[in-house]
Length: 131
Image (cartoon, rainbow, N blue to C red):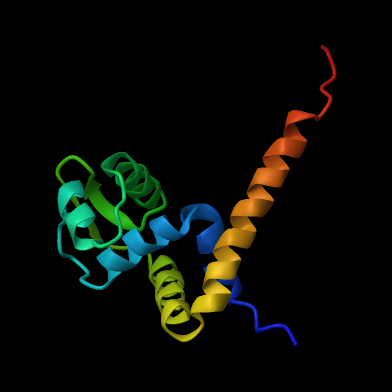
């Protein structure tokens, strides 16, 4: 029997904004204290004992900011402040899945990441018509 799938808005959030488990951990760290501004160095410290390079953290923060999940900049500090109620609901669904269905959530993150890699590989072989 397969476990129940995550809600579509959570899967869409993962597809657009959570490329790795590390990105998930960064997002959830910020979600736990909405409105608190953190710098890249503070995030790296707060994630311990996980060791995550600051360049990776900056990359995840830029992605999350571009999707309307965070406000601020990696240079001066960011905070969880979703741009819409729909985004807030999707992030809340993600947080709930982390608490209630962690295995399903982790499998989904890996599954979507793998599907993106396969699609990128397939796209590399797509024939293009010359003008």
